[in-house]
Amino acid sequence: MSKITIKQRRLVVRSALVLVWICLGALLFVLNRGHSLLVDNHDVEALNLRAPDMIKITIDRIKPVEFFRRDRDIFGVGGGRHRVRVEFSDGAPAFEKTFSLPLMPDMFLLSIPKMINGVEPFYEVFRTEPEIPREDEQTQP
Image 1 (cartoon, one colour):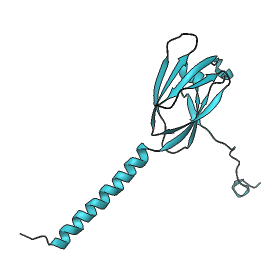
Image 2 (cartoon, helix red, strand yellow; image 1 turned 90 degrees about the vertical axis):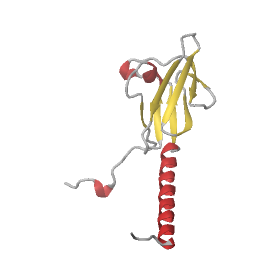
Image 3 (cartoon, rainbow, N blue to C red; image 1 turned 45 degrees about the horizontal axis):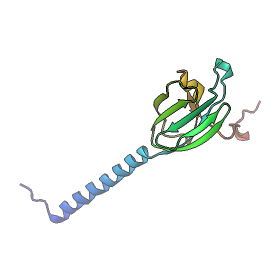
Image 4 (cartoon, rainbow, N blue to C red; image 1 turned 60 degrees about the vertical axis):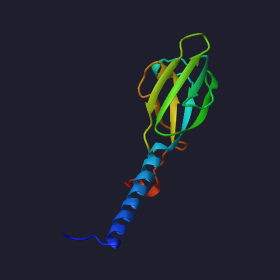
């Protein structure tokens, strides 16, 4: 029977601790990944959807914000799973939706009319600049 020396035991314990720290860091990154969520209350003319006139939106546990038709506001959210609650000013029952965002893009556009009417996808990646191919990527005739 082989006997494990103190040096070997220390090496195993230290290696296990390093592995635990790396796994913990990866887990915290995935769970706390922040996104910018641009909430949009514009009419969707392509689908003939009208935006609600006046609503109050709560995302996760962030302070509620009032939106009028054609309003847009940005929310900084953390994590991948979010809950949106829409309260209507006309007395209609509140609407709640829970959804998950992908890990990598930083900014998403959430369409309230699409979401409350059940149109998928109701969010999309928001790009601040149009993607223009570089000169060296364009094909030469």
